[in-house]
Amino acid sequence: MKVLVVGNGGREHALVWKLLQSPQVEQCFCTPGNGGTALLERCENLPYGVDDFANIAESVQKYNIDLVVVGPEVPLSEGITDYLQRYNIKVFGPTQAGAQIESSKSWAKKLMADGGIAIAKGETFRDADAAKAYIAQQGSPIVVKADKLAAGKGVIVAETMAEAQNAVDELMGTGFDSIVVEEFLQGEEVSILALTDGKTIRPLLPAQDHKRIGEGDTGLNTGGMGAYAPAPIATPALLERVQTEILEPTVAALRQQGIHYCGVLYAGLMVTPEGEPKVLEYNCRFGDPETQAVLPLLETPLDQLLMACVESRLEEFPTLKWYKGSAVCVVAASEGYPGSYEKGKPITGIEEAERLGSTVFHAGTKLNGDCLLTDGGRVLGVTSLGEDFDTAIQKVYSCIEAIHFPGVYYRRDIGHRVRE
Ligand code: AMP
Ligand code: GLY
Image (spheres, helix red, strand yellow):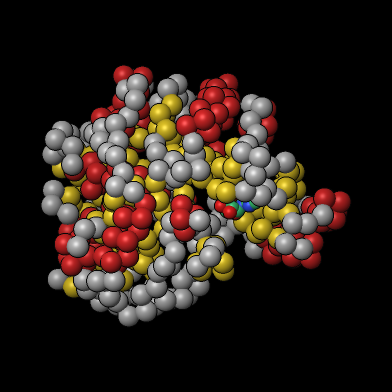
């Protein structure tokens, strides 16, 4: 089998790496890929951007690719799946209609409310004054969100009313004509990435991300600074509730809209102090960096699962097999991220970090001749496994110390919640 992964982040490197472990996968392609996918044996980077649907379709035909796996949300929300399906190409990832679950917060909220799913209560506004009046009525803390995709910059958790009112002006002043204002939920977050073929739903191990740049979960929001799995907050009882009260009704609600959803349904949940799981948001794709923590623990061949989703036969896999133990991924970022940062810094020590017992997934890297350079905000994700979290955490930090580039920054407290 030949598989093409679309995207260029740490998530896509992890997908290709895992797919290549399957005896059935003879070759992978990644477009546009990064330094990590360029260095993998049996993987070839193609030069096309994630929105270059025509060249992606042509490559699938040229190289006899059997399956396309789409990493990021932007091409999904722009209809890459619909486009490729017109050429009878097998695609893992929802259609444009299905991707609305991530690309339109108001659409997703209505779908969930109609399906009786527990969510943060809120309203959608196209008028700033009406949004502000609602905020004044509800009080703070309160959460203001861009209705559309915003590359992780569209959510403001406002401590005060003034902050919330400013957030309304800021979002509406920067091109977001529709916003969602919703109740602030307290609790602990967990990411449930579930594979689905539109009927059967098979969640992967629960994971926890670390969204803030600073230790102790302080500072600005980022794409994610580290993750671990399986997150102990998601007890078997909680996962059972997530399956029956959240995931199943969501897939049923999608079907009612005529949407056959094939791909990852990623529920970003808040587990409230009372132990209730509530949906903060849905994503229509694998999480980054959750994927870099979850996939190393997966024993069932990934290609078989993704193909089963595409061919509507996921029910053939009643359970997924997992290696025992814990996984922790720590992201090494460029100095200045999530603000401005410089690129093009030479990276050393990856081989040593791997020799010490980790897998290094590349995110923002590029190969310049033989030299590996930084090429983004999040540069690498270093994952280690251990029989328990203490072992995995110790190992990952001893490995990441081997990695150097000017200005390298990483949080030293990834996994702190499992130790509290
Ligand atoms: P989202 O992109 O919707 O997941 O939001 C980004 C982050 O903002 C989430 O991971 C939460 O940390 C926070 N957040 C979003 N919605 C809420 C909410 N209703 N209550 C509390 N925190 C929230
Ligand atoms: N880790 C958060 C995300 O993938 O959206």
